[in-house]
Image 1: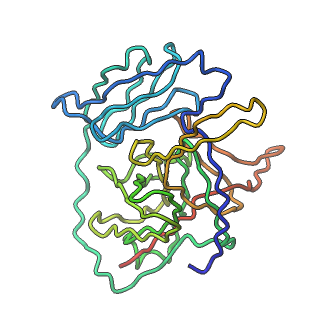
Image 2 (image 1 turned 60 degrees about the vertical axis):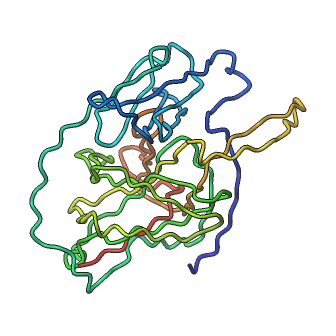
Length: 298
């Protein structure tokens, strides 16, 4: 990778707890299961409604989250209907399978004789941040030049991890009628394992037979806040001189500082749009987007 990687590593507690407010929260423990089979559902995204507090269910479906009992929890998993439930009632949560329409039959397959890398930015300097409990996405607009290389062959992303075999979930979204990330293009979770250190990862997507949509797409990642990905760090609060334990979840995904018409983040159980507009005139907004590229092929 030609870019220089300036890794500004700072951590936050992903349970989003501060000294003020801890007394108002209680640890809620529960398990998420399939409503028909009763089997546990791993890697379920669990959000506190309208707050930047989230967690992920473990491989056995169990979870714990510190939240006020009167708050709502939003449970979201690929292939299941989203469910909102009071935290006080979330000891056992059952999700119903989502009914999918049959996909259009694709009679052509990738032959892989041509390929094109898309998503490069002018600013190749990448920074690693602990993005916390949210989903950040990068928008890939469609270009007529992609007609001859319409299949998405690989995704390339840069990670920094201080543990071995950290896992992250990759997400692909179609663009909805309002320009937001909409329907997910995959029918099952894409869980990627990354190694220790700063890595340039290439993930093969050939088996998914993904075609670049004419409206473009959003590609992002979801940090899995599970025990396997967690590393604890002891820090001293300089104001109170008390010792605190910070929970850091890996891997970190690297970001580019860019100028865009809009940036999108999933937080508090819904998509947030960052845009610039003054007196009805739209401008560009500056911020960070995941340093993700795609490889297209024919």
